[in-house]
Image 1 (tube, rainbow, N blue to C red):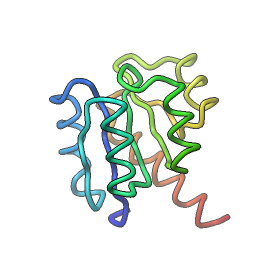
Image 2: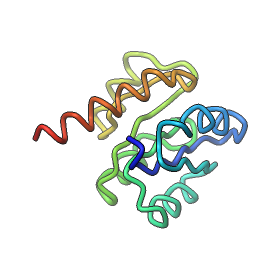
Image 3: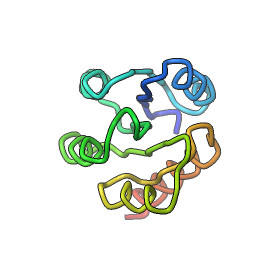
Image 4: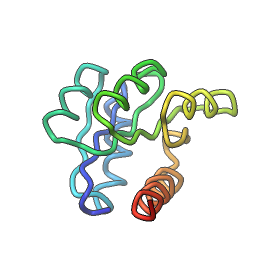
Length: 120
C-alpha cells in the first residue's frame, strides 16, 4: 500500500490531521483537505487512487460523482456511522463507511480492495 497516494477530506482540520498522521506509515503520501472543492483539486493534482472522506464534509452525491469522474476508491467516515449510512455509502460507490477514528477498519477495507483488484 506504500504505492498509494491518499487524500483525507474532513471539515475539521484537527480530525483530518489525526487520521492522516495515523496513515503516514501505511501510504506513500497523505494529503489533508477540508472541502469538496479542495478534494477534487487534490485528487486531480496528486492522481490519488484513494480518498477517505467524512460524510459531513462530502455528501453521498459527491462520493458517487468523484468515484465516477476519477475512478477513485473511496472510504467514507463519520463520527457516528450506522447501518443506514453504511448502506447508502456503498450504494453510492464507497468501499466502506467507518468511524472517523477507526484506522484499523479503514486500512482493512483498503487492503481487501487491493487484494480483490489484483485477483480480478
